[in-house]
Amino acid sequence: MPIDVPGGVQVQISDDNVVVVKGSRGELSRTLDRNMLIKMEDGILRVERPSDNRLHRSMHGLTRTLLANMVRGVSSGFERVLELNGVGYRVQKAEGGLVFQVGYSQPVEFPIPAGIEAEVEGNNRVRLKGSDKELVGQVASRIRAIRPCDHYKGKGIKYAEEKLRLKPGKAGKVAKG
Image 1: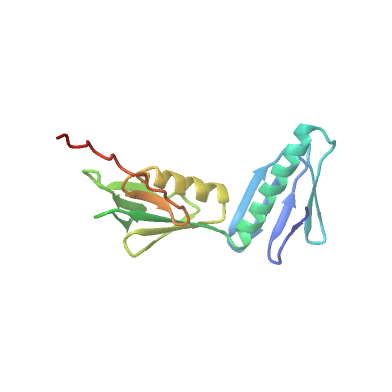
Image 2: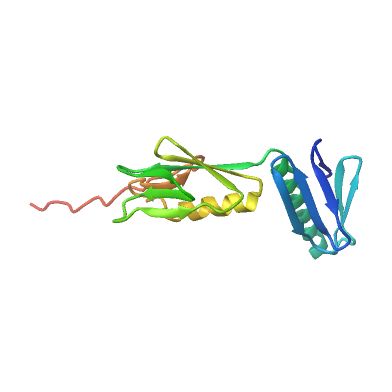
């Protein structure tokens, strides 16, 4: 599948398959597999594989997806939303990061890496934005790991689109006599 490159996005491909994509939201670069042939013609990126063996077929799909994510990232960006569920659970934006109060004895400070924008909505929603899909997902995963959701009470940090299935608790002992 060809990748359409929108206007305002520049793609540079070097001889050793280092691809640099520049756009309105920043610049991304990545070294891709040397066996894949990457061509830019008339605003369309194409990835071709040298043969039809299993390794080349799998690398073809991976290379195409990585390129498509880079182009989308510098043009429109990626976003992930996290929600905090629980009594007293809240998040605040602090200098250089976020501060979570999620049931531990001390607040948890989380530094936000360069390339990620974090917005706090209310006191229980965090919206992460960035141009690198891998980095946005990794930061969201690390934030979720601070206090994963409990499957009995539903308390914790979860993705906004995540459906949490609550388990039934213990039924208790049956009274005798």
